[in-house]
Image (cartoon, rainbow, N blue to C red; front, top):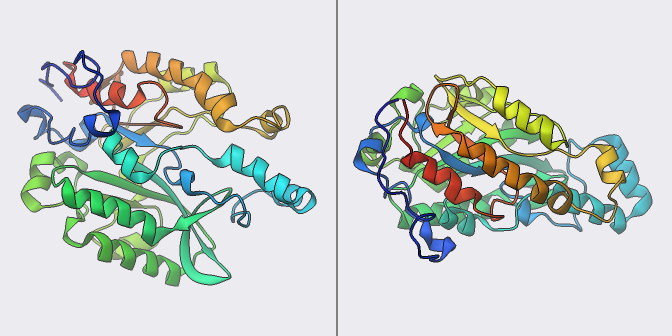
Length: 325
């Protein structure tokens, strides 16, 4: 990708603080014209890790997919055990509408069924909200921001059979309808193309059922390497050495992952206090050396925990105003 904008970027350099909750509400629409024809895979797009986790219910059941030792601990500790799981499962403080207004355009989703009813829920350690009510918030935002595009990545499914998948896909089609962008070569997906077609939603669906639905993108279209470490130096080294697959959407995960030892050593702590807050300055420093697009410094989607910390979202968005080779 060449000739990225060198125009003055919004937000960080304005000299006016403004309201973060509206400053980047239309950042895609506000990009300079030469970026309207750049592939989305070559833009810098901020995202949230476990985007829905602000919705988690600390009184709910432990969600499917959690290790047996977690379930056993909750059986013994009761609500105190659930409180512990909650503190180490919540990765975001702000709701979808706030995330969107702040500039988030990539959402990381985990979905599960439940034996007690036929509904589908977002999960991470515990159950959260029903999928329909959460997605409605995103749909309402898109209706009032017609040039903003979101990427919804459904990458983990638990306790779901074909019936549940078809139910979820029906919800997506009902919620977004003609706004769904059908599968195509990622190199052909630009803001200009999507605007011309009235499309605002790309859904990545990491299950073979996606093959039967042209409006769903398979998991093969997006890559998201995971460092799987609680150590800041290991994460930074991982981010510095990962090799981007330039033909696909690419997620750089600026997140630390607790081990059992991390949690046991911080029983009164939380993921936010022990991991997310300390790592954020290092992620911001790493971002300083990045630029959108291909090449050794090229980035696409960057996600973090608690994206309202510091200036993560403006830092990612403003990468689009860097010149690239």
